[in-house]
Image 1 (cartoon, rainbow, N blue to C red):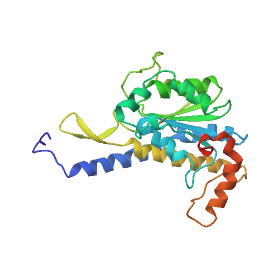
Image 2: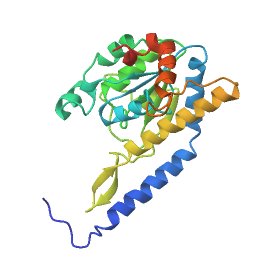
Image 3: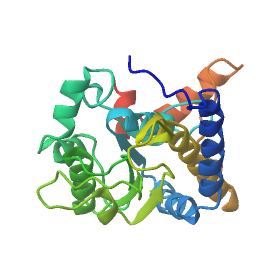
Image 4: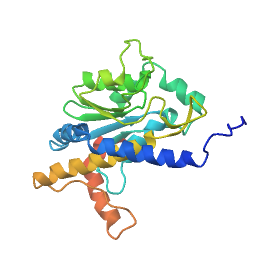
Length: 252
């Protein structure tokens, strides 16, 4: 292990991450794009559609936050692929994420439809799969919401040269620095990612904003309960029955 410089204030690194995490959440708290995304999602939901959520790599955690969880919305079609996540080996997952043709196949298989919204989580927004997912969804007539970093400096790996920010109707900046790691040490080195925290915030805030839109129209929102509270299983089964044919994860 490389030695630390004697002048490095080791005990300050955690406090620095805490301060930057709070600052990032403060930035997101003022983001009008989350409410804009909620309106796009609600537009499809109120006509009987579902909202779709995709992420690859560690960004799959953002889609997981939206899919079938206590306090979340039932009509969320989570496009969650183990081979594109940390559940497979990092070199293989990276190879899949950079492969062409996968994104369009996913949109087809998960039946993204016109008038619905697809939320794509990708910190860098440069790899072919999330870009192709967005492109294919737009071709279907779906609205694309990107959750990504506007600070990302990497060039697109997609043949078009486009990045995810170029394709979305709404771009929610996840408020993380280029490279995601938020705490500098020893000059140009940095550690401690922020995107896991900010993605979770965006997902939770998005759900709350959508529920508010349901209530504004005096409609009961299709919110899932914890399976560990009385009546939770029964409540959730009734909701699942309404949306089972559109949500791949409920058919397994």
